[in-house]
Amino acid sequence: MYDRFNRRISYLRISVTDRCNFRCVYCMPAEGVPLKSHAEILTFSEMAEVVRVGAAMGLKKIRLTGGEPLVRKDLPVLVKMIAEVDGIEEIALTTNGVFLPKLAKPLKEAGLNRVNISLDTLNPEKFRKITRGGNVVDVLKGIDAATDAGLLPVKINFVRIPGENGEDEKAVREFCEQKNLQLRFIRQMNLKTGEFDAVEGGYGGICEICNRLRLTADGYIVPCLHSGLRFNIREHGIEEAFRKAVEFKPEKGTGTESHEFSNIGG
Image (cartoon, rainbow, N blue to C red; front, side, top):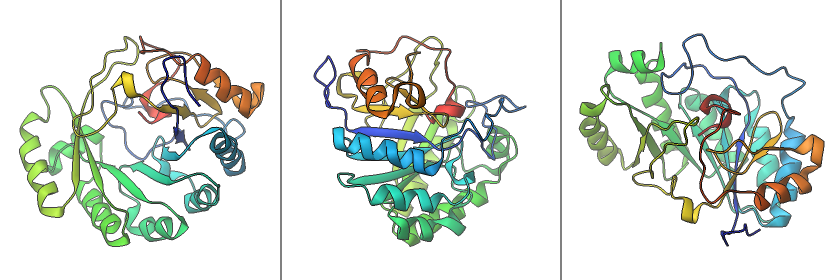
């Protein structure tokens, strides 16, 4: 699949749920967000069918996001379904890591290749403040579980929060070097105004080479994180939704109010 700007679209990020066990300050309000009903959320079979259709059209890489994807019950089942799709070469997961001590091994056995884990500070008090109640020790255990399970390379996502965690970068960098983890720095973005920066240590935020689409938990294929365009697979059909998303993928996003980080996975 090639868009109007000759970018080859080969990467789909799937938000498997809009729910999360954290309330991070840069992702959602303290009271949480309105949750979709179960009837609105795609089943695993529907998600797997989207992957099958997309793979036939050129998708190679899948990333599972949320919300927090690991709060979705039986996620290894979905991973296995995706891993069995011809043409899919990599399955990754973005998570806060809390449930990895229990799930890292089953996910690896199901076919998950690697994980990105959020870690914005090593300071327990500051971590509790940023996540509104989280325990950094749980995340550190998750990182070890992912490494032990062979979900490599383990990548760490550090969101730079102005005035909050700038002094924590050095400690997190040293931690990653000691643990042989790959560190990525992400600046806070504004979806409404379309303000964003390239990811330091990754490829996100570079519009010229953007090769990704997104699937929301309630069935919309979104061509750009910073655009309000979206095409529902139940309304258009999967193949047509893909074609429209690719056809209308903008050269660069300019802002949206149709989704939030909490329900599209960044």
